[in-house]
Length: 368
Image (cartoon, rainbow, N blue to C red; front, side):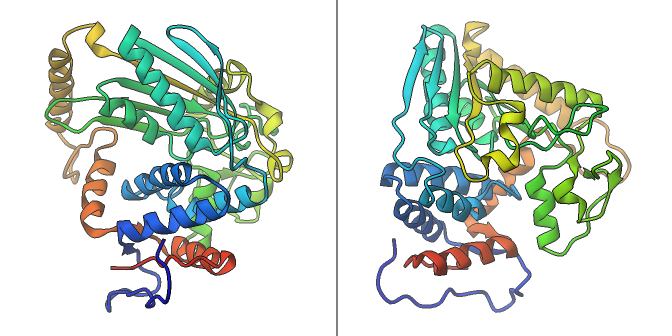
């Protein structure tokens, strides 16, 4: 953390107050480390949690990024999230395990679980690790990217606060229940798919409203199950599942894999009024498997490269300049932001500054 008298953050002269600005990577790391350490995490856990959030920001993810650090810190300070978790493997075989997260930060539980899944995949070809008594783990894509970086195919899903109702119903019983997949390539960057089972997350809707943009048709439903663009329906309403009944079916499946199978809470256990001031007992599932058990690694990555090349050279619709593979835009954004700095939307800057003042932090976000 940066100590002592600090100069005010420097904003480029052309940056208006509503523009996205960039902060130095070092200053964001220092901010996250101080905020989360003061909230009770060990420096090791604070640093690891900060890195997960930074990576989401570097990839240009609108939510689950560094702007969420104050929210996580407040829950740690309030004791809702356990700042000193003792993670424990409850059940284990050569290829499977279940981790009790001790109500700790989801990012710490998730990194630990995926690392264990990768280790099992190296030894036995596949590793499947479930986690329970965890909390929100941020961007699902981060953990499958870990697997792809280790030459593994990675999969993960999680349950979360309720947002989606079964098709034909008005009672929310599922969160966004994302699916993320990471696949190593050869000449190309890893393929990283990270999609929720809702058209958009509740946090994304709230962010759009906070930054003065109108809701788009098809994002939310009102309390009667009708499409709405009225911000008043955000609290009482529901999210829209992708593909209608197909999105609902996938959310149902992932609720079983993340919640039922792992022994975590599920469905109505995660009503927002129930988990607002207590540990949510979210469940996660992580899978890693070694493609070299199917063919030599170089042959597999060459075949992935060929598929990517065919997608990139597919005949385009008029007006489309380029066809992208899953995760490609995010990887390009990451490379750009590593050079320019961590991007901060206006709402993120306000949230981080507000918490800095509230908690008396000494770390400044140094803007470029």
